[in-house]
Picture 1 (cartoon, rainbow, N blue to C red):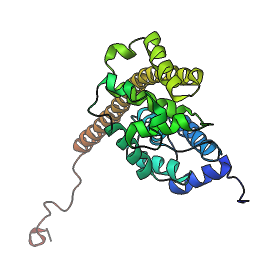
Picture 2 (cartoon, rainbow, N blue to C red):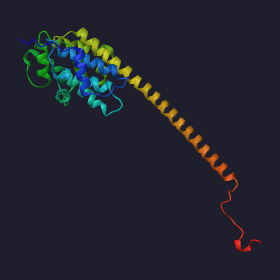
Picture 3 (cartoon, helix red, strand yellow):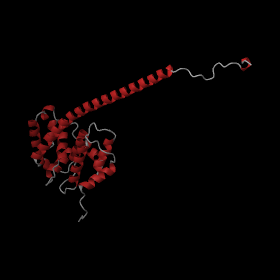
Picture 4 (cartoon, one colour):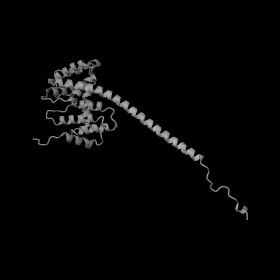
Length: 262
């Protein structure tokens, strides 16, 4: 029997900051904090099982909501910290996410939906169908928001635009998929709807941030130009003042000692 104490959120945060030691841009801090807490709480839940669809949801959430983060070079370090804080690695998360996406790279939307049929025959198999079969067979299955986002990401990559163009069409699709997976469709639909809504808000917020940064950059450039202009004026005035000063004798024409009167 394992009597080791359950790691706390504080433990996870401490681990995170041992791997990423730089401060996080305040605009994005909430994204990182929420993802860290969610990943940690799932990792210590007895009913939770890591799977590639969940990994895809984590990777997609991070990449989309950290887009535009500055400095860009910190993004890999932050993601590394998130994964290490739950005793995993970024290579595992990104590798599994890429593998599950590549499994449906060449299939149609109808073929994708067909992967969800007769899942009792697919448990523990390979590829997407195997992952789906394992989920459908696991009771209880610990559903999570990243899993829902991962499922949406897969559908988004193969679905025609009209299949995800309205709230009604999205609800119809994910109710069908959720039922076949034996998971709560209410939670799935809520998470997918919130994710789509937050993406729209994030795009709008990014545009506002771009405008603010552009305005700030313009003001900074104007201040620099004004400072330079003042410096140039002061330098020119000093130069003119120096030119207007009378020449100081430095030993010019002196009488020849031999011609001095006796």
